[in-house]
Image (cartoon, rainbow over all chains, first blue to last red; front, side, top):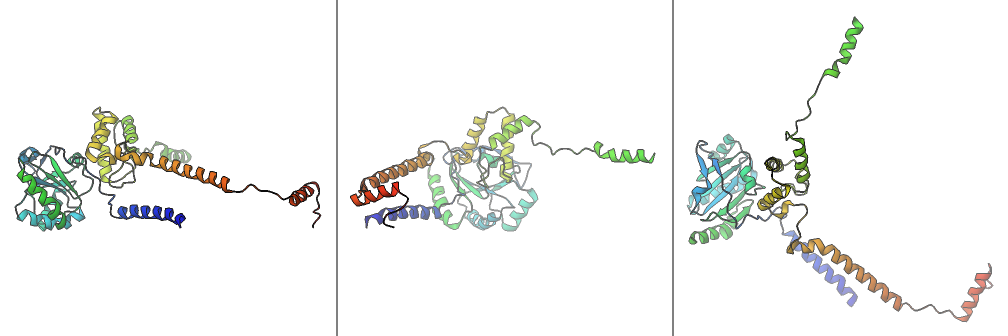
Length: 176
Length: 155
Protein backbone atom coordinates (compact mmCIF):
# COMPACT_ATOMS: atom_id res chain seq x y z
CA UNK A 1 0.00 0.00 0.00
CA UNK A 2 2.72 2.48 1.01
CA UNK A 3 4.47 2.08 -2.35
CA UNK A 4 1.54 3.87 -3.99
CA UNK A 5 1.59 6.82 -1.61
CA UNK A 6 4.70 8.53 -2.97
CA UNK A 7 3.69 8.59 -6.64
CA UNK A 8 0.29 9.81 -5.50
CA UNK A 9 1.80 12.66 -3.47
CA UNK A 10 4.01 13.65 -6.42
CA UNK A 11 0.96 13.61 -8.67
CA UNK A 12 -1.05 15.80 -6.31
CA UNK A 13 1.77 18.34 -5.96
CA UNK A 14 2.28 18.47 -9.72
CA UNK A 15 -1.42 18.81 -10.37
CA UNK A 16 -1.53 21.63 -7.81
CA UNK A 17 1.23 23.52 -9.61
CA UNK A 18 -0.43 23.03 -12.97
CA UNK A 19 -3.79 24.17 -11.60
CA UNK A 20 -2.29 27.39 -10.24
CA UNK A 21 -0.46 27.84 -13.54
CA UNK A 22 -3.75 27.75 -15.41
CA UNK A 23 -4.82 30.97 -13.74
CA UNK A 24 -1.54 32.84 -14.12
CA UNK A 25 -1.17 35.28 -16.97
CA UNK A 26 2.37 35.17 -18.33
CA UNK A 27 1.70 38.41 -20.18
CA UNK A 28 1.27 40.26 -16.94
CA UNK A 29 4.67 41.62 -16.05
CA UNK A 30 4.70 43.23 -12.60
CA UNK A 31 5.74 46.84 -12.89
CA UNK A 32 8.71 47.98 -10.84
CA UNK A 33 7.35 51.52 -11.09
CA UNK A 34 4.55 50.99 -8.58
CA UNK A 35 5.49 52.96 -5.47
CA UNK A 36 7.93 55.12 -7.43
CA UNK A 37 7.48 58.67 -8.73
CA UNK A 38 5.75 58.84 -12.10
CA UNK A 39 8.37 59.83 -14.68
CA UNK A 40 8.00 63.52 -15.45
CA UNK A 41 7.35 64.66 -19.00
CA UNK A 42 6.18 67.60 -21.03
CA UNK A 43 4.43 66.82 -24.28
CA UNK A 44 2.15 68.58 -26.75
CA UNK A 45 -1.57 68.10 -26.25
CA UNK A 46 -3.46 66.03 -28.76
CA UNK A 47 -6.36 68.42 -29.28
CA UNK A 48 -4.20 71.51 -29.52
CA UNK A 49 -0.56 70.63 -30.26
CA UNK A 50 0.51 74.22 -29.68
CA UNK A 51 -0.25 73.72 -25.98
CA UNK A 52 1.91 71.60 -23.73
CA UNK A 53 1.03 69.40 -20.83
CA UNK A 54 3.43 68.72 -18.00
CA UNK A 55 3.11 66.22 -15.17
CA UNK A 56 4.09 69.11 -12.87
CA UNK A 57 0.55 70.47 -13.25
CA UNK A 58 -0.86 67.38 -11.58
CA UNK A 59 0.85 67.82 -8.21
CA UNK A 60 -1.71 67.67 -5.46
CA UNK A 61 -4.25 65.70 -7.48
CA UNK A 62 -5.11 62.04 -7.73
CA UNK A 63 -5.37 61.20 -11.40
CA UNK A 64 -5.45 58.39 -13.92
CA UNK A 65 -3.07 58.18 -16.84
CA UNK A 66 -4.63 55.95 -19.46
CA UNK A 67 -2.40 54.80 -22.32
CA UNK A 68 -4.47 54.38 -25.45
CA UNK A 69 -4.26 54.49 -29.24
CA UNK A 70 -6.65 54.53 -32.16
CA UNK A 71 -5.08 51.34 -33.53
CA UNK A 72 -5.56 49.48 -30.26
CA UNK A 73 -8.47 47.09 -30.50
CA UNK A 74 -8.94 46.29 -26.83
CA UNK A 75 -8.99 50.02 -26.04
CA UNK A 76 -12.39 50.08 -27.73
CA UNK A 77 -13.55 47.66 -25.09
CA UNK A 78 -12.69 49.92 -22.17
CA UNK A 79 -13.52 53.18 -23.90
CA UNK A 80 -17.25 53.27 -22.95
CA UNK A 81 -16.31 52.42 -19.36
CA UNK A 82 -13.90 55.36 -19.28
CA UNK A 83 -16.53 57.67 -20.77
CA UNK A 84 -18.94 56.56 -18.08
CA UNK A 85 -16.33 57.08 -15.36
CA UNK A 86 -15.53 60.55 -16.69
CA UNK A 87 -19.19 61.54 -16.44
CA UNK A 88 -19.23 60.65 -12.75
CA UNK A 89 -16.47 63.21 -12.07
CA UNK A 90 -14.73 61.00 -9.53
CA UNK A 91 -11.20 61.22 -10.82
CA UNK A 92 -9.67 63.10 -13.76
CA UNK A 93 -8.51 60.85 -16.59
CA UNK A 94 -5.63 61.94 -18.78
CA UNK A 95 -4.89 60.09 -21.97
CA UNK A 96 -1.48 59.23 -23.33
CA UNK A 97 -2.02 58.72 -27.03
CA UNK A 98 0.68 56.16 -27.72
CA UNK A 99 2.40 55.91 -31.13
CA UNK A 100 -0.61 57.19 -32.99
CA UNK A 101 -1.49 59.45 -35.88
CA UNK A 102 -3.18 62.63 -34.72
CA UNK A 103 -6.04 62.47 -37.25
CA UNK A 104 -6.87 58.86 -36.35
CA UNK A 105 -6.78 59.63 -32.64
CA UNK A 106 -9.11 62.62 -33.01
CA UNK A 107 -11.47 60.49 -35.09
CA UNK A 108 -11.58 57.84 -32.34
CA UNK A 109 -12.46 60.47 -29.74
CA UNK A 110 -15.15 61.98 -31.97
CA UNK A 111 -16.75 58.62 -32.57
CA UNK A 112 -16.54 57.04 -29.13
CA UNK A 113 -16.68 60.13 -26.95
CA UNK A 114 -13.78 61.78 -25.15
CA UNK A 115 -13.36 60.68 -21.54
CA UNK A 116 -10.11 62.59 -21.12
CA UNK A 117 -9.54 65.95 -19.52
CA UNK A 118 -6.93 66.08 -22.21
CA UNK A 119 -4.76 63.69 -24.16
CA UNK A 120 -1.05 63.97 -24.78
CA UNK A 121 0.63 62.79 -27.97
CA UNK A 122 3.50 60.38 -27.52
CA UNK A 123 4.09 59.90 -31.22
CA UNK A 124 7.41 58.09 -30.90
CA UNK A 125 6.57 56.10 -27.81
CA UNK A 126 9.37 57.60 -25.74
CA UNK A 127 7.24 58.41 -22.72
CA UNK A 128 5.81 54.93 -23.10
CA UNK A 129 9.28 53.48 -22.53
CA UNK A 130 9.75 55.76 -19.50
CA UNK A 131 6.56 54.38 -18.03
CA UNK A 132 7.38 50.80 -18.95
CA UNK A 133 4.45 50.49 -21.34
CA UNK A 134 4.62 47.26 -23.28
CA UNK A 135 1.05 46.87 -24.42
CA UNK A 136 -1.89 49.16 -24.81
CA UNK A 137 -4.14 49.81 -22.91
CA UNK A 138 -2.45 50.40 -19.60
CA UNK A 139 -3.64 52.67 -16.83
CA UNK A 140 -1.68 54.24 -14.00
CA UNK A 141 -3.18 55.55 -10.79
CA UNK A 142 -1.02 58.45 -9.62
CA UNK A 143 -1.40 60.06 -6.20
CA UNK A 144 -1.10 63.63 -4.98
CA UNK A 145 2.66 63.29 -4.48
CA UNK A 146 3.07 62.09 -8.03
CA UNK A 147 3.73 58.49 -6.99
CA UNK A 148 2.40 55.66 -9.15
CA UNK A 149 0.19 53.64 -6.83
CA UNK A 150 -1.21 51.09 -9.22
CA UNK A 151 -0.78 49.91 -12.76
CA UNK A 152 -3.60 48.26 -14.60
CA UNK A 153 -2.20 46.17 -17.42
CA UNK A 154 -4.78 45.62 -20.10
CA UNK A 155 -8.40 46.59 -20.28
CA UNK A 156 -10.21 48.32 -17.41
CA UNK A 157 -13.35 46.36 -16.74
CA UNK A 158 -16.30 47.35 -14.59
CA UNK A 159 -15.15 44.72 -12.12
CA UNK A 160 -11.58 45.91 -11.61
CA UNK A 161 -12.78 49.50 -11.61
CA UNK A 162 -15.19 48.71 -8.80
CA UNK A 163 -12.92 46.40 -6.83
CA UNK A 164 -9.48 47.92 -7.33
CA UNK A 165 -9.24 51.32 -8.92
CA UNK A 166 -12.10 53.28 -7.35
CA UNK A 167 -11.44 52.14 -3.75
CA UNK A 168 -7.78 53.03 -4.24
CA UNK A 169 -8.66 56.46 -5.63
CA UNK A 170 -10.99 57.10 -2.67
CA UNK A 171 -8.24 56.11 -0.25
CA UNK A 172 -5.63 58.26 -1.98
CA UNK A 173 -7.97 61.26 -1.92
CA UNK A 174 -7.92 61.10 1.89
CA UNK A 175 -4.14 61.16 2.05
CA UNK A 176 -2.28 64.47 1.94
CA UNK B 1 32.43 48.16 -83.85
CA UNK B 2 29.44 45.93 -83.16
CA UNK B 3 31.55 43.65 -80.96
CA UNK B 4 32.88 46.60 -79.10
CA UNK B 5 29.33 47.78 -78.39
CA UNK B 6 28.36 44.26 -77.26
CA UNK B 7 31.36 44.09 -74.96
CA UNK B 8 30.46 47.46 -73.52
CA UNK B 9 26.89 46.33 -72.88
CA UNK B 10 28.17 43.15 -71.22
CA UNK B 11 30.37 45.20 -68.95
CA UNK B 12 27.54 47.53 -67.94
CA UNK B 13 26.46 45.54 -64.85
CA UNK B 14 29.91 45.98 -63.40
CA UNK B 15 29.27 49.69 -63.11
CA UNK B 16 25.83 49.41 -61.65
CA UNK B 17 25.77 49.87 -57.91
CA UNK B 18 23.10 48.96 -55.43
CA UNK B 19 23.29 50.62 -52.05
CA UNK B 20 23.40 48.34 -49.05
CA UNK B 21 20.47 48.56 -46.69
CA UNK B 22 21.34 51.46 -44.44
CA UNK B 23 22.58 50.52 -41.05
CA UNK B 24 20.28 51.86 -38.36
CA UNK B 25 23.15 53.59 -36.63
CA UNK B 26 25.69 55.59 -38.52
CA UNK B 27 28.31 53.95 -36.37
CA UNK B 28 28.69 50.20 -37.05
CA UNK B 29 30.72 49.64 -33.87
CA UNK B 30 27.93 51.09 -31.79
CA UNK B 31 25.36 49.06 -33.70
CA UNK B 32 27.29 45.89 -32.96
CA UNK B 33 27.48 46.77 -29.29
CA UNK B 34 23.74 47.52 -29.28
CA UNK B 35 22.91 44.13 -30.85
CA UNK B 36 25.19 42.40 -28.36
CA UNK B 37 23.35 43.99 -25.47
CA UNK B 38 19.92 43.50 -27.03
CA UNK B 39 20.57 39.76 -27.28
CA UNK B 40 20.64 39.61 -23.49
CA UNK B 41 17.33 41.44 -23.20
CA UNK B 42 13.86 40.09 -23.66
CA UNK B 43 11.24 41.60 -25.90
CA UNK B 44 8.19 42.29 -23.77
CA UNK B 45 5.66 41.86 -26.54
CA UNK B 46 6.80 38.55 -28.00
CA UNK B 47 8.15 37.17 -24.80
CA UNK B 48 10.27 34.37 -26.18
CA UNK B 49 12.29 36.55 -28.47
CA UNK B 50 15.26 38.67 -27.62
CA UNK B 51 15.20 42.37 -28.17
CA UNK B 52 17.75 41.90 -30.94
CA UNK B 53 15.68 39.49 -33.01
CA UNK B 54 12.19 40.83 -32.42
CA UNK B 55 10.35 42.82 -35.05
CA UNK B 56 7.75 44.13 -32.65
CA UNK B 57 7.39 47.89 -32.71
CA UNK B 58 8.22 48.17 -29.04
CA UNK B 59 11.43 46.22 -29.64
CA UNK B 60 12.38 48.65 -32.38
CA UNK B 61 11.71 51.56 -30.05
CA UNK B 62 13.72 49.95 -27.29
CA UNK B 63 16.62 49.30 -29.65
CA UNK B 64 16.49 52.95 -30.62
CA UNK B 65 16.50 53.87 -26.94
CA UNK B 66 19.51 51.63 -26.27
CA UNK B 67 21.32 53.05 -29.30
CA UNK B 68 20.69 56.62 -28.17
CA UNK B 69 21.83 55.94 -24.64
CA UNK B 70 25.00 54.30 -25.94
CA UNK B 71 25.63 57.31 -28.15
CA UNK B 72 25.29 59.45 -25.02
CA UNK B 73 28.13 57.44 -23.53
CA UNK B 74 26.24 55.33 -20.99
CA UNK B 75 27.74 51.97 -20.10
CA UNK B 76 25.97 48.68 -20.79
CA UNK B 77 25.27 48.26 -17.10
CA UNK B 78 23.70 51.71 -16.85
CA UNK B 79 21.42 50.96 -19.79
CA UNK B 80 20.43 47.61 -18.29
CA UNK B 81 19.68 49.35 -14.98
CA UNK B 82 17.53 51.88 -16.80
CA UNK B 83 15.49 49.19 -18.56
CA UNK B 84 15.15 47.11 -15.38
CA UNK B 85 13.86 50.19 -13.53
CA UNK B 86 11.19 50.52 -16.26
CA UNK B 87 10.26 46.95 -17.04
CA UNK B 88 11.55 44.97 -14.08
CA UNK B 89 13.85 41.95 -14.04
CA UNK B 90 11.61 40.46 -16.67
CA UNK B 91 13.57 42.18 -19.45
CA UNK B 92 16.66 40.21 -18.51
CA UNK B 93 17.07 36.82 -20.12
CA UNK B 94 19.32 35.81 -17.27
CA UNK B 95 17.42 36.55 -14.07
CA UNK B 96 19.57 37.86 -11.21
CA UNK B 97 20.12 35.63 -8.18
CA UNK B 98 17.67 36.96 -5.60
CA UNK B 99 15.77 35.38 -2.76
CA UNK B 100 12.80 34.59 -4.98
CA UNK B 101 14.89 33.26 -7.84
CA UNK B 102 16.93 30.88 -5.68
CA UNK B 103 14.64 27.99 -6.52
CA UNK B 104 14.93 28.82 -10.21
CA UNK B 105 18.72 28.83 -10.10
CA UNK B 106 19.35 25.97 -7.72
CA UNK B 107 16.15 23.90 -8.00
CA UNK B 108 17.56 21.72 -10.80
CA UNK B 109 20.66 20.90 -8.74
CA UNK B 110 18.52 20.04 -5.72
CA UNK B 111 16.48 17.71 -7.91
CA UNK B 112 19.67 16.16 -9.32
CA UNK B 113 21.09 15.46 -5.85
CA UNK B 114 17.75 14.19 -4.63
CA UNK B 115 17.42 11.84 -7.59
CA UNK B 116 21.04 10.70 -7.28
CA UNK B 117 20.59 10.08 -3.56
CA UNK B 118 17.46 8.02 -4.05
CA UNK B 119 19.15 6.00 -6.80
CA UNK B 120 22.18 5.34 -4.58
CA UNK B 121 20.05 4.22 -1.64
CA UNK B 122 17.90 2.01 -3.83
CA UNK B 123 20.92 0.30 -5.38
CA UNK B 124 22.47 -0.31 -1.98
CA UNK B 125 19.24 -1.74 -0.63
CA UNK B 126 18.92 -4.02 -3.64
CA UNK B 127 22.41 -5.39 -3.20
CA UNK B 128 21.67 -6.17 0.45
CA UNK B 129 18.36 -7.87 -0.20
CA UNK B 130 19.54 -10.00 -3.12
CA UNK B 131 20.73 -13.34 -1.67
CA UNK B 132 24.19 -14.57 -2.58
CA UNK B 133 23.82 -17.36 -5.10
CA UNK B 134 24.63 -20.68 -3.37
CA UNK B 135 25.26 -23.67 -5.56
CA UNK B 136 24.51 -27.18 -4.51
CA UNK B 137 27.36 -29.70 -4.76
CA UNK B 138 25.64 -31.38 -7.69
CA UNK B 139 25.21 -28.16 -9.63
CA UNK B 140 28.81 -27.23 -8.95
CA UNK B 141 30.01 -30.53 -10.30
CA UNK B 142 27.90 -30.10 -13.40
CA UNK B 143 29.18 -26.62 -13.94
CA UNK B 144 32.76 -27.89 -13.72
CA UNK B 145 32.01 -30.57 -16.27
CA UNK B 146 30.36 -28.00 -18.57
CA UNK B 147 33.30 -25.70 -18.33
CA UNK B 148 35.84 -28.42 -19.13
CA UNK B 149 33.80 -30.30 -21.66
CA UNK B 150 31.81 -29.20 -24.68
CA UNK B 151 29.28 -31.87 -24.02
CA UNK B 152 26.77 -31.91 -21.21
CA UNK B 153 26.66 -35.41 -19.78
CA UNK B 154 22.97 -35.02 -19.05
CA UNK B 155 22.03 -33.92 -22.55
